Image (cartoon, rainbow, N blue to C red; front, side):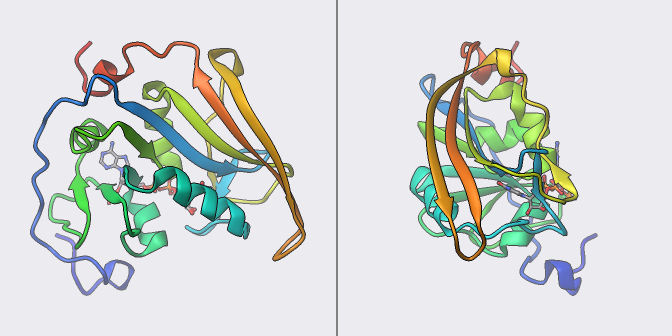
Length: 201
Ligand SMILES: NC(=O)c1ccc[n+]([C@@H]2O[C@H](COP(=O)([O-])OP(=O)(O)OC[C@H]3O[C@@H](n4cnc5c(N)ncnc54)[C@H](OP(=O)(O)O)[C@@H]3O)[C@@H](O)[C@H]2O)c1
């Protein structure tokens, strides 16, 4: 049983939340949003390996008002529910409850908790991205134009399965010099991802 005194989880309390199975809206879009380096690094020591304030604004603008699905480790790295959005935390710990968030015990259960939202965002980390990749129809990737050292990586993207539909080139000098691109990819195989997500085909 998870201890409330465990300092790495000291913002978490018990009383499991039961996530009811329900259908996703037929027209729901499921997207991954991620910032990744050229070598696919997305994190180090359970935090982001760069500082890019405009990317955080981009993340906020895209996700505002919607459901965000994240792994328990990513939630711990953020430390609190983000305002204006519904946070769904995925964990295998059935004792875990997190104030202000929904808790789900599998990715299909997390998606079921997002019913009635037209835009569902998978926001990481590496474990959750790897499981969600076959299910999503859109990738919003902030492509950091350099290799970065890290211990969490985005899965390989088969570019033949994705169409690039938008690319915005950005630079910053502070807080660190970075070139980064906001890129949107749409799946070449959009159909049936919702039923796959819910394990219905
Ligand atoms: N650059 C970016 O855009 C970005 C975005 C998000 C995160 N990150 C980075 O990614 C790193 C964290 O990624 P991570 O892979 O270590 O952790 P993660 O994916 O955030 O969380 C992993 C945890 O999710 C739960 N989980 C995973 N699959 C599950 C399943 N099928 N059913 C139930 N629970 C499941 C487990 O929680 P329990 O152990 O509680 O069972 C597991 O330990 C950090 O460095 C973070 O900063 C980067």
